[in-house]
Image 1: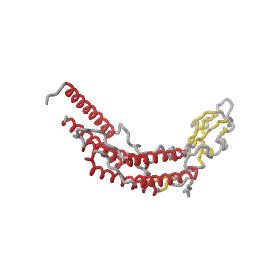
Image 2: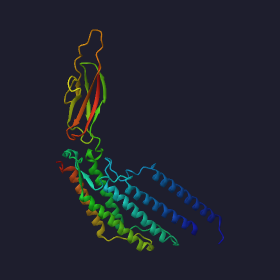
Image 3: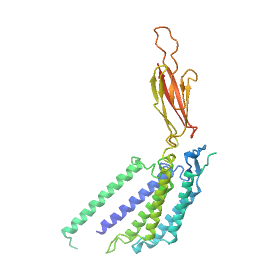
Image 4: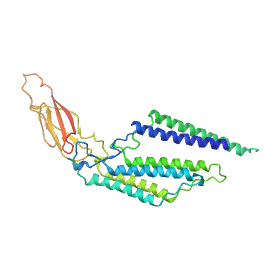
Length: 120
Length: 211
């Protein structure tokens, strides 16, 4: 039975590692499209500028930073508390922080889509 | 330790399931690597732009998967194995991410421009037509990113003598040219262009053959 457990452990580790590596590799070499990840678009109804209504979006940058920060923090917490047999709890302020970050992103997106006129 | 038939059956089933999952995982990874499973739009919106909400979902999915794996592995030899307890705050965080994704889709789907690639500016139908001299042909133009928006129509080739088109897309072929008796009329090809007022650099053309 121990051999089977070891086998399952390595199988899952290799699969998850390979899958993550493959996705990161394809994100970095451009096979997975990341074009305009940090850009938003205003509505077509507001006219069109030379960039096709594209604008650089600070709300997306802050959401990206918050997402990566929360992810790294959680993985570090997990490595420290894995032996307890449960996923680590996160500080009560984190949901509020991520909620706020997502809200900023959504408000920015809604404003751009419905109200902003960035055409020149 | 003496193995009972039930133990042996359990072990065999375990190894078989393990092998099946390994083969399945290998095939999936190989197909992803070869591009047969297309990941190119993994975090893309319908209009082709990469999506921050989808990227966040992707990151959190991997974080939770790795965390679950670490916890399960750390307690794998336990005599009382059970699924790890997921704290409420983690579920809340995932709920926030999921809700944000849904609201983001709602905002995007509220605007046609969010669903159509920027290149899809305007489309004329029909793209080809055959009519007689003096007859009319109705053309239609669709602007997917802003349905119902105004369109400018013009006969661009030939500039003169190619007929007329009004701003509703109704094309009227020119009168028949004078030809020697018994000779058929020459075939005239006119090119119709529709330009979107909302997207001035977006246009499409149609060709009408007049005989």
